[in-house]
Amino acid sequence: MLKKVHIKHWIIAIAIGLTVSLLISFFSFSAECAKIRESVLRLHVLANSDSDADQALKLKVRDSITAKAAGLFDVAGDEQDAIETARAHLPELQQAAEQRILSEGYNYPVEVEIVHMYFTTRTYDAGTLPAGMYDAVRVTIGEGKGHNWWCVVFPPICVATATDGAKKLDDVLNTKGQDIVEQPQKYEVRFKAVEIAEDVWHTVSGWFS
Image (cartoon, rainbow, N blue to C red; front, top):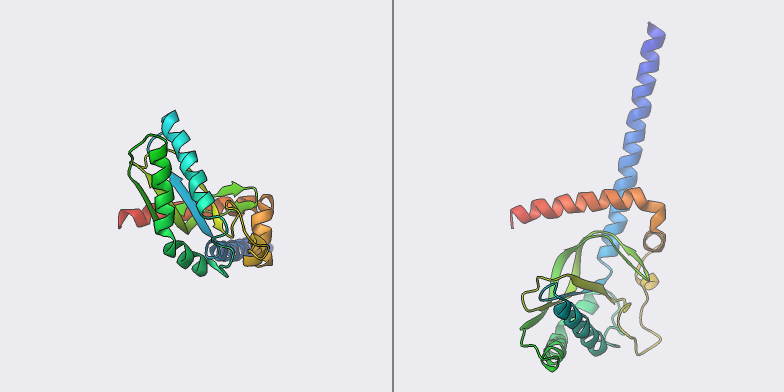
């Protein structure tokens, strides 16, 4: 009987140890994801609707916005610099969007603004960004009820650079962050856990906003 009690205690101890280890691993990964979210500025373009015409217009507005933003973020040292740069040039970005919409024969209103918004986990050519709240330049065309397009403008991944000194994603992330973004398959379970946690938090926060 005493031997069985000792075995049971060992099993409980091992289970507790594994649970604690998993929790530490999750919170460590979650903290690294938070650093990633605080290091980039995203671009988010919302179409008026999901009609073929409105979706095509969304891509044309995207092209005008990214062309106007070419070289804009080359001198930004970090995400806060990028936000201030974007804020200072919002009128120009707004005008570029408005002109493109009019040139395509539409009279939709458009709003270009800096927002703090929720993104699900997304994969780009440069890597995978975890789910969560990010700062973004958001372009809303008309009612903004159509499927959207998104990318990263700082570091300038989806806009052209004018200088060789523009920062790359590797320049704004630490070694662990780079590995998470560039090798997401190594963290598949933790990526999913973070996404579930962020989804729940985003939903609950929405109830009280």
